[in-house]
Image (tube, rainbow, N blue to C red; front, top):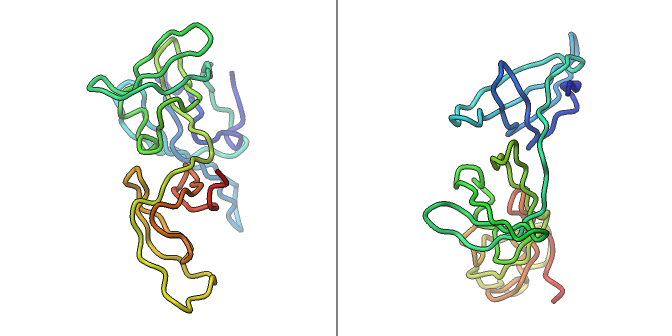
Length: 188
């Protein structure tokens, strides 16, 4: 299926020269003078080679047919990360390089979207937000206002983030999975 280059987003799969590529980063660039272009950073699915391409925003690109299905995360072992299809209880093992940066945020029983092409998992999409506990952080300074100053903290999954001064160790917080940023204190 042909689509306009400017409509491509992170996680989409395109076909180029008979090979499939997953888009890691897509940016539309509009220079003051000249033609607007779309910059795509892609990873070849067969061997993991990273490629960077530029297309005119109106240029047609072949988008591969990809099946998106919801799966539930079960566990991790030497083979990779194991997920179950809640409709038919089929299990699928997703390699570590496909999961990539999403690995620390996976929690047992979490519902994720897995995109696959001919039964081969290509990308994984986590929920936008997860609730985690603060493992350690600096103590709050007396008299420090809740202004825009943030302090470093380490989450229960080992990821570093920045939290407001009033957040203490042991507090459950909501984190954005895309960049690991603090959203709010958990309401549970």
